[in-house]
Image (cartoon, rainbow, N blue to C red; front, side, top):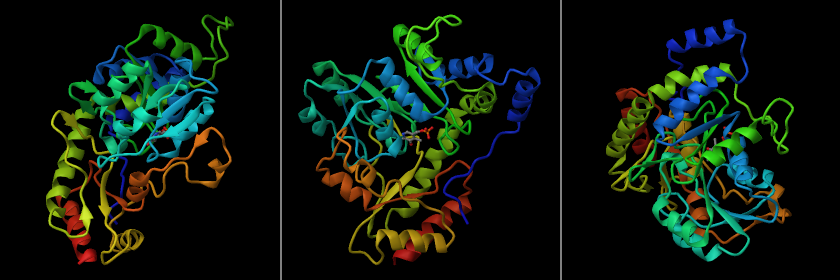
Length: 365
Ligand SMILES: *Cc1c(COP(=O)(O)O)cnc(C)c1O
């Protein structure tokens, strides 16, 4: 079986983790601070604030920006559920703008949704490809909105010289299968000193000095133990992403002339795709339905996954929630019924890449 993701922790990690164990300082401390410094440098931002996962990164960002109950956040309907859950956790209302062929929020769909309650736009850089930040920034500036980037899948991605997390407040995940992994972990990036201060305050119970509380905060801290796992990876992030890009190029070439599928949209000039996922569309009317295609591919030994099978608000648990505003999103609905992600992780061999392509061809012809 060729797995859809593979986690291999570099041997040099072991000594770093052992050092933390022997230091006795397992919780947030100097190693977390070191990871933050490296993370900020890679994303060319002034500050990176480590947290315990990507979902809390989103919640923390919104709270630090003062987003609260009654405020509306415009986001994409085609995302992992954490995007929506974080908006609800912050007490805000989620409003959805349809997506484009790049699988990301379509800025043209955002502007008509803005009203006096709108406080932020939350694009998701899905699969590692950044949303159209130039157009979104224009809307945000015009209407004085915050941008909170769900960059969970986009560590190291670039949009015309600005890294993911560098336009608005950036929220990253370091979950086990993300491009950088600390098992569980997250990061918030900002260029604002003031916001950095708020993020650090709210991460740690709203506590400025010991038992001096300035706000009702949280415990969203990352551990030194987890940070030690991330340090060698952030150091090699361009290598890790380059391996994914090379694999994506091989998949593009190998799948180019197969009928009934659409490859991911070509990367636009000035934008890098860090291929957290390589996601094709299986068009209706072909030999196999999307779900049959997935089952057959797995039977043939090629791991694959559907990210995500439905638009994010289309579940019973959100049906009666007034803070979840369902919307007509025909593009996202169609795309959710067609997507399949193929293995693109950095540990694929040339032989495995060939097998993936030939198997896709075989099952569809
Ligand atoms: C992984 C992910 C998150 C949440 O990150 P966790 O670390 O799992 O909490 C949020 N948004 C998107 C798009 C993700 O892929």
